[in-house]
Length: 378
Picture 1 (cartoon, rainbow, N blue to C red):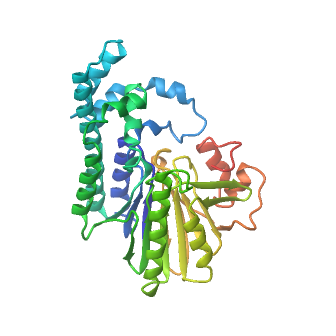
Picture 2 (cartoon, rainbow, N blue to C red):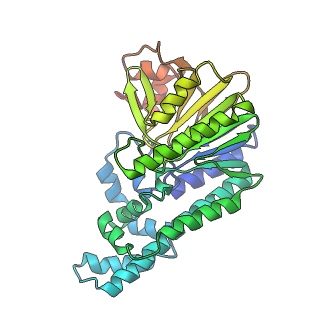
């Protein structure tokens, strides 16, 4: 089985470029399916080139945010921009205008969720597509409002207060219904679910909340769903001894050796419980920071910390037969690199190139292309 894994694209342009590249790629490379592991939305996470060592404030100042807003939300942006312009001039926004703004913001949220549906339709028309929910698609925090406040250059609190008395939470319910309507031969939603595909158990840990640490109700809900998912995975063991987990919740990064520790207690317990069980186990972790791929073994699992699409449209391909192979795809320069696999327990390195050399055959080339000098954990 050969699978494309995409995550954290965050901008319409990145999605369009990756989709166009994949259409050409599948004409020469056999691909069985595509997994989008969250965060299609989130223009506020936009980056320049590979996204490392650039002047963020200078880059943001160079953006025409109003044009960006009109481009991604042509149906709702004009009304929002009009009302916010009064607010920025210090004019009083009365209750009537506030209600009008709230309705327009609701339309914006709906427009952005509808965009996700359209993108998933387009990907699934190319290859069978699986989708796991990211933080920016989550209904718990509506980070899509953070995206809007970024484009308007106003505080998130002002945006949130404007929608308090609107039925904005119904938009997510409608979105979930639209996801269900896509279900079929070429599309499957896997957020919080375990499904069978080509002899594998596919399981998606959704990014409903960034953290599973039990400090707030949202974290407790995230952990509850994760625990239910790990129990569901176990029930599938009688049908398959091959598993891929796609995670979009956060965890802890250690640098020496470089490893990812899942934040969920349920996941950590599951990893220990399954030692010596199953023939192939892969844990895919997504995060918008990663400019390089990390591919290693630890605790009986293969770990793939996959490239973030917001970083110059990077993504990964994983090839699974008797052995597991991983590829780093850089579509902007049309370069596919097969990665080396390392054991994180015995990895030895002391600088950027030595760390990258654990996975890449030409580490110097990577540090120069992606401007990573001095940063061995990216």
